[in-house]
Length: 468
Image 1 (tube, rainbow, N blue to C red):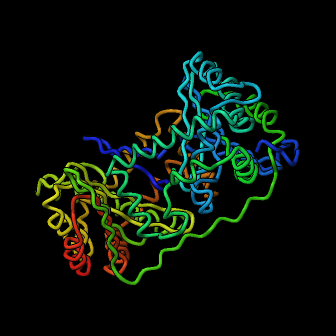
Image 2: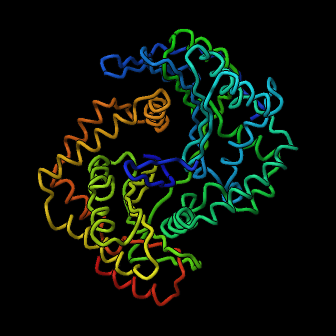
Image 3: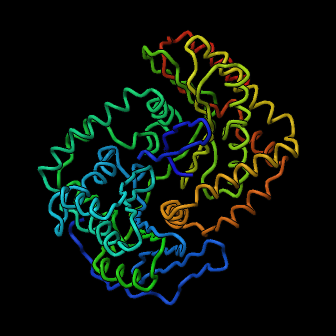
C-alpha cells in the first residue's frame, strides 16, 4: 500500500510496518467550504471537510468503539528531498517530539500522553510523514491538542538536535546490521539510481551530522502547509466538537504553495544485479520488476497478482520455496506503488549455498503464472484472503485512520471497504495472466543480494534473469 516498507513475516499474518515552520507566513481563518462529503451509506461511514485554505479533515465515527485516534499526515518524505536534504523528513519527525511552545520539553509531552494511557508514534516514508495518538474516547480533545501541537508548534531546540543526531546514527547502524532491511536499500538504489526513491529514507550519516536548526525550520515551512496536510480523527467522537477544535488549532497554518515533486522514473532495457558482499549466515535477496504507480487502472489486478504469489502461507511462492523446497524461512511479494512510479518485488532470505536454486524456483513460479491460467478455485481463495485480511485490518480506530487517511493524502477518490471488495471481485484469471506477462519481463528484472558471495555468483545469476 505505501512506499518503502519493511517486511516482518509472521507465521500466520503478513505484517507490514512502515519504516517508520516555525515561521508562519500566511494567516487564514479555517472557515469551511460549502463542500462536505458524507459517506454514511457505507458500513463504515466517514465525512470529509475541506477548509477554504485547503486543509482537509476526515472524520470516521465508530459509535461502538471506546477509543479515538487522531492523526496528522503531510504529503512529504524522502521523495521530496534533494540529495543534500536526504534524511531531513525523518529527522524532523523525531524532532517534533522534543518540545513545543506549550510543552517545552519532551518529558512533558510523554507525561501527558502516558497520563491518559495513550499509544502514540510517528512514521516517515517516501511520500508521507505522519503523527498520531490513540486513547480512550473521553480524552479526544487532549489527544487532538497534543498531536496538533507537535505538528504545528515544535520549537526544534538546538540542544535536542545534537542529541538526536546520535540517536539517528545508531538507528542507521542498527539497519546496517540487519541485512533483511539493508538489501531493500540496495534494491532501491539499483532500480531507481540517483533519484529520490533510490535513496534511503533515513538518509546518510554525513547529512545527519550537518543538519542545522535553520534547515529544519526551512524544510518545515516549505512542506508542512495546509494543502499538503490531512487530519484524520476516528473513533467514538462528536463530529462538530472535533471540527471546531481543528478550526481553532489550525487557524494559523501556512498557506504557502506546495513545491513541485521530483518525478521518479524507471528506465531499463536489460537485467540488472547488485551484489553487496557481507559475511552472514543467510543470503537476503530482492528480485523485482518495473511496475505501475498507484493511480494506474491496473492497480487492483496487480495487487491480486501479489496476493496470488506471495501473500499468506498458502501463496504459491510460500508453498514452493518453504513447504516444497525447504529453502527459506521468509518469502513474500510486495507491490510498491508510488505517485509517479512503482515496482513489483519478491523478498526472501535463503541458505547461502542455495541462492541459484532459490532464484530458479522463483522464476519457475513467475513463468507458471504467465503460462497457466489460475483456476477458479484458487482465484476464489485469494479473493477471500484479500477481503478477509482487509476487514481484519479495519477493526480499530487507528486502522481506520490509516485506511481513510492515506487515500485522502494521495488525493485519491476514497474507496470504502465495500468499494474495495468490488474492485477485488472484478479481477479475473485472465487479468492475473495479463499482469504477469506485463511485469515479469527479463529486460525489466532487477536482483539485489546481500551475502558472502563474489562476482562469480553475479555472472551465474545474470544467466537466470535472461531466461526469466
